[in-house]
Length: 508
Image (cartoon, rainbow, N blue to C red; front, side, top):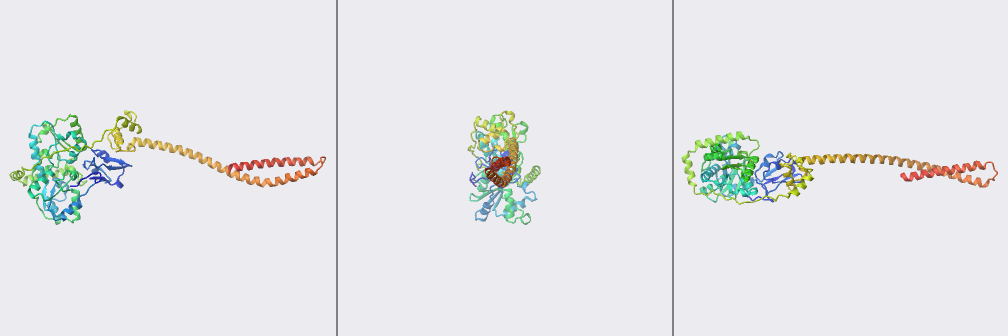
C-alpha cells in the first residue's frame, strides 16, 4: 500500500486542463482545493479521496494515482497474488453477461486466486449484528466507507467514538484470505473506490474497475478468449447486495428498523454532511447511521462514468439473488464458522486537519475588499464554489481561495475597469486632438520660417540701400520723404518677419 502525501498525492490536478469553473471546490466535502493563479490544486493532507472532484470535472482535469504498473509487476513476479473483487463488479462489467467469464478474465491476468469481497461483507455484517444487539449508549456510524472514516478523523475527530470499531469488507476479506491461503500471498483489491488506495496497509495494491479495464486491454484479454470460472472460496451470500443503498441494512435484516425510526441512510456529500453536523450538535436520535460518500458503491469514482444508478442497482440485485439461490445457507454458515476466530475489530485514531478559524476582524476585512459591507451584500450565490460569502472569505483568509472567484466582485471590478478604460479613451482622444493641432502648428511654423527667410534678405537689401541714399540726399531733396517712408515700411516688414521666425521656433 502506498503512502500518499503532499509530495505524492492520491488525487491531483492536470493543470493544462483546468478551466477555472470551481466545480471541484463546490463538490469537495473536505474543502481540500486550493486556488492558485486560477488553478484548482488538491491539498493532499486535507483530501479524503472521495473522488467527487474526479466525477464532476467535465474537463477531466482531476486524476488519481494509477496502480496498473505496480500490479503488473506483482503479477510478473514469482509471488503468489490474490485478487479480491468488490461485489459491485456486475454493475461495472454489464457487457459481460456471465460473471464467471469475468472471473476467468481476472484470473487470466495471472492471479493465483480470485476471491469475492462480498464474503468479507458477510463477516462484517455478522460483527455489526453483534454490535447492534449490545445495549447502545450512543449511535453507531458504519465504518465501511473509507472516505467517511477519513472525513471524521480529519474534521470531526470528536465523533470517532461513534464509528463502529469494525473493519471494512476489504480489510475483512484480506484477513480471511490470509488465514485460508497464507500470509505470504500478496493481496490486490479491485473495486469502485479511490479511497481504498489509502485505507489500509493490509492490502498490497488497489485497482479501480477503470484501471482493471485498462489492464485487460494491455494484456489483450477479452470475454471471447476467457474461460468461465467460479470465485475461489470462501463464497458469499447476502454480502453481494452490500454495494447498493441500504445494502448493509439488508445484511443485518434491519429493514423494519426504518419504520421504528432508529436507522438512517445518508448517501452523497450533502446528505452525509447534514447527518454529521446534526450529530455533532446533538440533534440525532438514530441508533444506526449508514453513511456513504457516494450514492452507494455502485456509483464510486472508480466506475465508468456512463452507468446509470437504477440500472446498476438492478444488476446487483439480480446477481445477489443468484448468489442466494446457488449457495446453500448451511454451507455458507460452515464457511462463516471457519473464520470466527479472525479479529475483525478496528481502532480509529484522530488525524485532525482542521485549520484555526481566522478572526472576525480578518474575515470582515476580506468581505469589505469584496464589496460586502452589510449582510444584504452577501448574495451567497455559490458561484465561487463555497456555500456562503463568509465561507469564501474564510477560505481567502486561510490562503485557499482568491478574491476573483467571487462573481459579483469580479463583475463589479470589470465594470470599473470598463469605466476607467472609457475615461482613458477620452483622455487619449483629447491628447490625440492636441497632438494633431500641434502637428498642424508645427507645419505652419515650418511654412512661416520658409517665408520669413525668403522675405528677410530682400528687405535687408532694401533697408540698406535706402539708408545709403538717405545719407547722400540733401535735406531739401523732394524724394527724401518718400525714401524715408520706404525705410519705415521696410523696417515694419522686418518686424513682421521676425515675429514669423519666433512663431516658427516655438512650434518646431
